Image (cartoon, rainbow, N blue to C red; front, top):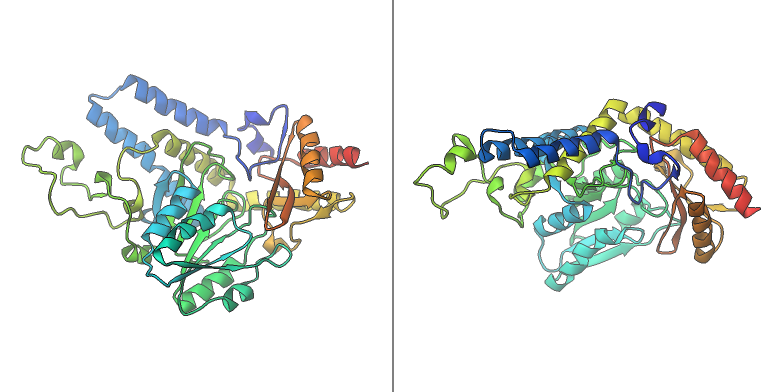
Amino acid sequence: MLNARQHFPGLLGKVFLDAACISLAPRPAVEAIQKFLDLSMICPHESATAQHIVMDEMRAAARPAAARLINAHQDEIALVESTTHGLSLAADAIPLDPGDRVLLCDLEFMEVAIPWVQKKKDGIEIDVVPNRNGEIHIDDLADRLTPRTKVVAVSSVQWTNGYRLDLAALSRLCRDRKIWLLVDAIQQLGAIPLDVQQTPVDILACGGHKWLNAPFGCGFLYIRRDMLAKLRPPLTGYLSVQDPPGGWGEYFQTPTTTPVQDYAFVPAARRLETGGTANYPGAVGLAASLNLIHSLGQQPIAEHIFSLTEQLLAGLDRLPVTVVTPRERKNRSGIVTFSAGSADENVRLMNRLLEKRILVSVRYTSNVGGVRVSCHFYNSAEDIETLLAELRRILS
């Protein structure tokens, strides 16, 4: 998408194929943050209170932008620091009892598992489904469910090989069994669309620093509206309290206010936010990056990415490498992983590419992985051909 490349000056002088690690920020996001920083430096408003309110509104703009991305309502969106932050909040908020079980697969990034590993001390048990040649089959997950399984925690796209799960089938399974479905969507959103109306999930976490192109320490947490009341929010802050009549500016000027009272909290996902002064620049940058994605269109982005991955797969088939990523389009994402042999050989190959300013990664989990290539909307067919040409030179 040539019209997208103009927004990414970081593409100059390199072939950047590593959004699955951390993406480049687009110029509109950097400019939005700079505008916010100038505001913070100057305080052009009539009072610091008025300035605070404007800053809150600038941060809040990220919620509707995130909601639009997944076809949710903005009241179902909480702003969080990262996917890690969102998954940890969810694990603390979902009501579980000793003996309850959580189901994972063995391809997951460690953060999908860590919050539940921590809860083993509380009597929570973990079941792990093994992958089949880098794929996670819904039947295998279904076979491991028990009457005590309360949560299925999965990534919609696996981080080492780009395998995209049949989330719709898993959603139906969990809804039929009344099991919480918790989704890490950081390796999907921004590349391949996900509509939570068509594919219901209970909770979804997504950091901004990968395919959303917002490496500023801000992401979002989606909580399905009818599940919010069932959660036990682990945090409490004054911005999680319903706005008082007249707003906070007037409230803080009222002599009769007292800190100890019965507070009414907002009936929205932002109830799980810190409820205090948060990462304003990160949210401003996230909103700008999301608005760029919306301006380009999620479906055109996905089609462009699929075109690049098909070009890459065709080229890899003519090289002495093994493609690790599953081939079916319905299970593909923006990630294509291949192997030139052992892990050491793949690391050496990666380093040779890095010397040529072709940025890729090597990633493994449960013996699945290799050289990981991320094809994003700002990449071009020329980027892919440059990679393939260098691979041909190195591997010859």
